[in-house]
Image (tube, rainbow, N blue to C red; front, side, top):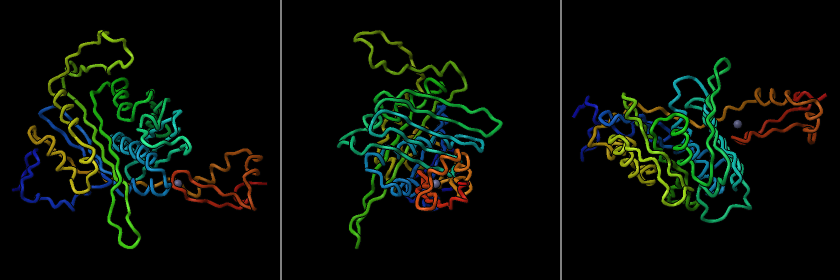
Length: 335
Ligand SMILES: [Zn+2]
């Protein structure tokens, strides 16, 4: 079976393209379901995610939340056509008070979370960990281009809710997002059981040519009095079907290391025909450098620089990747 048709053909026979030829982990797979005017991206994060979360040794609940933020960033940042930068940040009053995921191209994604360990409790979901505050998404296209920032209030909901709110208010493109993060346990020989982090996510958008088909129901007004009349908007049938299909995706399917992205997309959309585009590989690599840290040190006032000298040296640790940079007072510009 050599297929040039837009449908992915997967039978009970092994697929024609060897799965090993396709990077299943740490990649974004763009796809389209032409008959429903749907476009989307599916991402799988394996070693890239595990590396970031393990380096910081985050408590499981914090790691899971930061993983969700990384998946969302991979889904959104990978849509940028230019050599720009996408930054996702949360600032909230919950146990995880600050998160940042910095995407500078597919080969440079880094992430960091600040949390108060004394406020972590068993069973807290993402919404409880975040608390109230806001989510900011910044697109920076470089020095001569405008910087765009979208802000969404976080009010006890999770990052999927916030993403939906963002697309409804800012982009006005009907969008659904699914995010999942889990720990995979591997049998441990010698050193006991080991686990590694995995994550997956999907973004689905309805992009019809005719703008009148874009109407979408407003988010449910959670605090509206009972019996209040909400706008009854009839959504386009294709989008109703798209939402219903993505809502069937389970977390385990998104993170399953044995289920390729193509198979998952086929499973969801085979009746409508899905076209999958070449994957975009992702890498989690910090963009810090000795030069950049040195430049940052020189931007401080001389008095502040002098205060940083401890035991005859200035030590700076990168919060993203835990790299340690040491400078002599002379190098750090201390007089
Ligand atoms: Zn770094």
